[in-house]
Image (cartoon, rainbow, N blue to C red; front, side):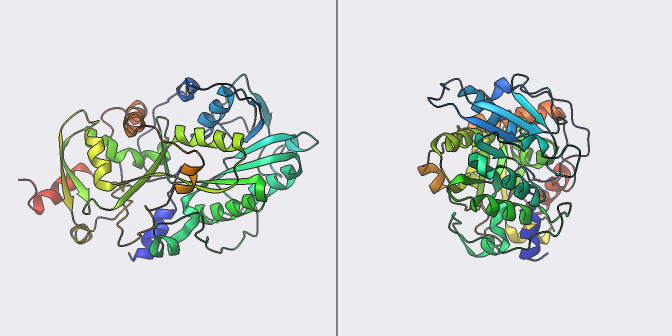
Length: 384
């Protein structure tokens, strides 16, 4: 695998999607929106009318709750299929983001106005275009949940740090609204469509999003917190000097509301950054059991045919993509982005995975198994 193939694979599993998890069934876990409330929240001086397109998956509920906590008037538009029990007190409009399916976007037509739209869509970008076209004259602000995937392989390979001024790759528009054009390309086109609204548009380009209620598709993001929590001898990739970036879903929610209230516009990279060794050492401070970190060089890992990101979640060596984990959040910080304590975020991640999968959960393919890791450590003389 060359580095372009590697980075293409990495870009496809960013943000709310990550490494594939275990094939075991996920335990039912009911979202309690009280977990998202900010006890310090006070009512906004100027309540906003907020339309949320989606809002009941992983990222949506914390944002909705933070809007509610601030006294804003929230309306949800979705199919009513994902976690329909959420927010019984909030107005709900039913429909489909695809105009030709079911009632389509009919509930959004008319003269009704909103101050803010939050769009959590992640697939075909023509869906976002349809919503923008219907709503653009009746809204003041359109916020889109984007991803650092928009920067693409060429930037990951050649630009470090990556900022919001880094040009996005040019990609073709899909011919049809039902066409699957892939995550990265979809995010690029939707991101650009929202920014074309000028001062009305804001795109939030997140790295991996972490929290208690992460789902099956983000299972791999919990690998390092859980593996280190279990203790013992741990195979660690590289020399520890590669980067690692993330954002807590609650920080994402708070900054979204902040952008809405302050009428910020434009793109924002939103992700904290640590060296990989700092990341793992901080996790050791949270762990239930002691552990020993054994750093295996990139060359040794390649000889063992252990692949970054897929088998070793979250790790992208700077030799292959120096920009991948060097996304600058300076603009967002200047506009009010703040982060929870590391310990709070990753305690939530560990507890959430154990609640969903059980304390004996085993990470499935392609993630590195404990048996394989032990064999590699023994082969290279790190353990007997």
